[in-house]
Length: 314
Length: 297
Image (cartoon, one colour):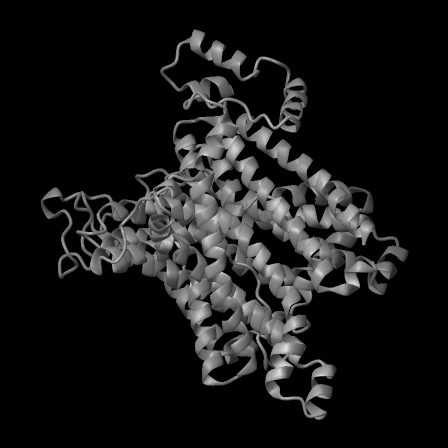
C-alpha cells in the first residue's frame, strides 16, 4: 500500500515538470518578442524595455526557465501587469465563486447521475432504462454554456425565477449565493450527470452479470439486496473514477459557464487576462487549474485503496 | 464539455466483417450519419442556400423570425439563417482540420512511443503533461499565445487532442509489436520504417478511427466554446460560438439569436456522438464494458 502511494506521488513529478514547462512556453509561443506583444502596439521602446526587465525576459531562455521553476517551487506566480498585484493574490480573490460553483455542480451531477445509472441498469431494457439513456444522450450532446443560455432564457427571462446573471458573494448571506449559483450549477451539473449515468449504468450491468450475483440469486437473495448491497459496491469503482474526473471537468467547465452568468471567478479572470494580454495571470490561472486537476487525479488513484482492496496488495 | 468514448451498449451483434453494413443495421447510428451528412451538405452548399452572412441591414435589426429572415436578424441586422449556415461550414472545417492535424501528430508520437522503447518514456511523459491540463483551459492558454484566427484555433485544439490520439495508438502498437507476423517480417529483414508502415500502422488504425468522430465532436465543441468566450475565431467570422456570444447580450429581446445556433450545435454533436457510438460497435467488437476505464487504475 505504501509503495502504491509512493509510486503515485513519484509519477506526479515528471507530469508537473511538463505542466510547468508548457505554462512557461505559452508566453514565448507568441510571434515576435513577448515584451512588445504584452505592451501592445502603442508602447514606446522604453516601456517595452522596462517590461522586459520586470518579467525577466532579458535573460537567456534556459536561465529564464530555471528561474521559473525556482519561483514556482516557492509558490510565486509573478505579478499581474494589469491588476498590479501578485498573480496568486488575484487567483485567491476569484477562487470563491469558481470553487462553490464546481462543488455545487458536482453534487448535482452525482445526485442525479448515479441513481439514474443504477436504476437504468436494474431495469435494463425497459422503458425506464431507455428514457434515461435518451436523456443522457441528449445531455452529453449539449455544451454547458448553451444549456446555461437556455436556462437564462427559460428561468430568468420567461419565468423570472432567478436572476439573469451575477453573483452574490458569501459575505452577503449564503442563501443569496446559493440562489445566484442555481442556474449555472445546473447547467454544469446536468451535462455531467448524463455522462455519470452512462458510466454508472454500464458498470452496474457488468457487475450484474458476474457469477456471484447469479449465486446470490440462486440462493434466494432478494433482488433489492442483490442490486443495492452486493452489486452497487463493486460498480462504485468505475463510478468513483468518473465522479472524480467530473470534478476536474467541472472546474474547467466553470471557467466557461462563468461567462454566461457574469460570475467573477477564475474563468472571467483568465478570459479578461487574455484580452488584456496579461500573460502572468494567464500562466498563473492555467497552472493553478492544471494543478488542481492533477491533485484530483491523484485523489482518484488513492481512493481505489478504499474501494478496491486488490490495489492494496499491488 | 465532455466528449469521450463511452462504453459499448449492450446487445450489439459483434462481427468483424462488413462493418459498414453493421453500421447501417443500427438505425440510431444511421440517424447520426444522416445528421452529420446533412450538416456537411449545408456547409458545402452555404453560398447557394444562404445569403451574405455579413450583410448588415440596420433598418431590420433584431427582426423576429419570419418570411424574409427565417431565423430572424441580429443586432446589426444580419440574417441569422445565413450566419448559422456559414457557421456550419466553419465548424465542420475546424472539426475536419483538427482531426487531420491531431491524427498526424498523435499517430507519429504514438507510433514512435510504442515502437521504440527508449523513446516511450520521454514521449509519453510529455503527452501526460499535456493531458494534465483540462482541454478548454489549455486551449485558452494556447489561444492567448497564438492570437485569434481560424488557423490558430485549429492548431490549438489539435495540440490539445493529439495526446489522446497518441495514447490510443501507442496502446495498440505495444500489442502489435509483439505479434508473430511482425516478428516474422523482422526475421525476413524488413526495416523499421517498412515494418511500421506496412504492418504496424494499418493494424492500429481501427481503434484510432473510432476516436476520430469523438475528436471531431470535441473540436466542434471547443471551437464554439472558445469563440463564445471571445478568445477563438475573430469576431467578424460567422461561428456558432460568436453568434451565441452576441446573442447572449440580446437574450431578452431576441431569443432566436441563441436558439438557432444552439440547436445547430446540439444537432451536430448529437449526430457525431451517435455516429461514433455506432462506429465503435461496428469496428471494435472486442471492447467490452468498462475495460478501458479500469485500466486507468
